[in-house]
Length: 66
Image (cartoon, rainbow, N blue to C red; front, side, top):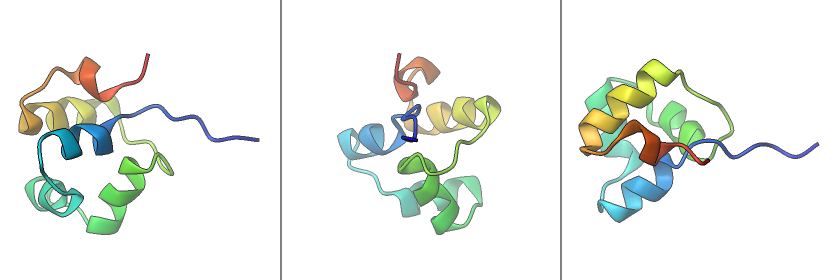
């Protein structure tokens, strides 16, 4: 069974020249947790996606694959 790729967090971080470590610090989360969101191993909540979008100055839609 293949894993669904839902979030584009890593792609947007790369486009903005930012790291998952930077995002982890901004969110007050463990770096490993954020890394797992970036690789889509674990899905975070839509509420957190909105917060991440605010930090990255993008629309939440830009963080989600259609």
